[in-house]
Image 1 (cartoon, one colour):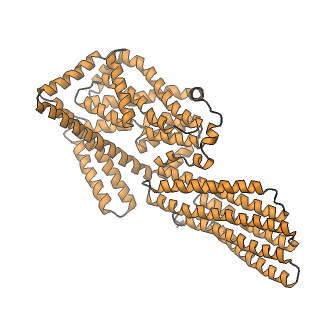
Image 2: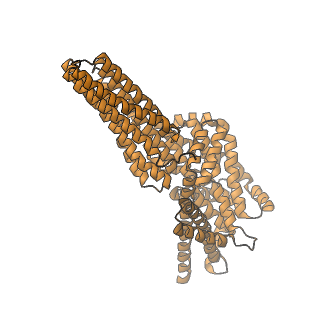
Length: 573
C-alpha cells in the first residue's frame, strides 16, 4: 500500500469523524431546543404517565421523539424514580416507549441519504441550517431564536450524514487498491454472517461498544445507514449491529444510576433487561430466517437505508408489544437483581438532595418544576414551625423545642440544597421564562428562610415568658389568635398561587395582607392602651409588641413570595 493510499484512508477517517461530530452536535442542538420549547408539555406528559401502561408507553415515545435520545429519557426516568416522583411500574412503561421514540432518528437518516430522486434533500437542509443560523443571529425574539436553533440543528444532522456518506462513497468507489480492499472486507464479513458465527458476534459487539462509547444509539445507527447506503453493509449485517446498539444504549442509564436509591438502580436495570430480553427474542429468528427477512425487504423496499430504519422500528415495537404484558415480572426481576442495602439509601443523601437530583438538570424544564415543588415543601415546613412556635407561646410550654429545632435544621438543609441546585440550574441553557423563574426562586427561598428565623424569635419569646412567669391577658391572647388566623389565610393563598403559578389568588392575598397589617396596628394600639391603664406587665408587654412586629414581617415575606410570581406569569387579559 502506497503512502498516497495511507493518506487517503487517514483523511477519509478525519472527514468521517467530522461528519459524526456535526451530526451529534446537530442532534444536541435540535433536542435541547425542542425540549425547551416543549417544557410545559413534557411536564404534562409526565403527569399523565401515571395513569396506565399504555399512556406511559405513549409518553416515553413522545418525550424521546422530542428530545431525540432514549438515553436522556431513561436517565430522566432514573432521576424521577430516585426522588420518588415515579414508581418502577410507571418507569418501565416509559422506558419501553423511549425505545420506540428513538427510532425516529433512523428515519431522518434514511431520508437524508435516500436515492432515486433528483431533489438533493441534504442540500436543502444545509440551506435550512443557514437560515436557522441567520434567525439566531439577527432576531431578538426568544421564540424566533429557538426556532432558528432547531432549524440549524436539523440542518446540521443532514450535513453530518451527507459528509459521512460522501466520504464513504469517495473511499469505496473506483477500482483502486483501497476501494477494492474495503469492499472485499465487508463482502467477506457479510458472507460469513450466520447463526453463532464470529462475524455475527463481532457485528453485535461492535454496535454495543460503539453505542456505549458514543452514548448515542442514534449516531451508531446513522453510521450503519451510511454504510448501507453505499451497499457496504447489507440489511442482514445491519440487523446484528442494531441489536447491539439497543443494549449499548443502556450503559448511559446504568452509569447514571450509580449512587442512587435502590429503586433508581432498578429502573436502569429494567432498561437493560428489557433490551437484553428483546435481543434474545429476536436473535433466533434474525439468525435463522435473517436472509429470508432481508430478501423480503429487498424485494418490497429495495433501499437498504429505509430497510434498516424499518427493522429498527419493528424490533422496538414488537419487543414492547410482547414485554408490556410482563411489566410486573420485569419489576420483580429488577428487585431480585438489585437488592436493598440496609441503611444505604437512608444515609446516602439527605431528603433535599434526593428530591433535587442533578439528573433532572438534563431536562431543565422538568428541573424547574421540581425545584418549585421543593420550595413549596420548604415553605410548608417553615410555616408549620411558625405554628408550632405560636402554640408553644400561647401555652407557655417549651417542651417541643427539640422538635422545633429539628424542623429548623430541616429548613436550613433544604435552603442549602435548593440554592445549590438553582446555581447548577442557572448554568444550564434554559429558556428566558425559566431563567426568570430560577432568579425569583432564589428570593423565595430567602423569604421562606426568614419566616423560619422569625419563628425562632417567637420560641425565644416563649422562653422569656416562661422564665419571667409573665402571662398575656385574655384580650392579648385573642388578638394574637386573630393575627394568626390572618397569617394562616395569607399563607394558604400564597402557597396555592406559588405552587400553581396562578395569579387568580392575587385579590385574596391582598385582602389577607391588608388584614395582617391592620391587625398589627390594632395590636400596637391595644398594647399602648393596656400599658396606660396598667393592665399589662412590662415583661408581657415587651414580648407582645415584638411578637406583633414579627408576625407582620412574616406576612411581608409571604407577600414577597406572591409578588415573585408576577415576574414570570402574565395576568389574564
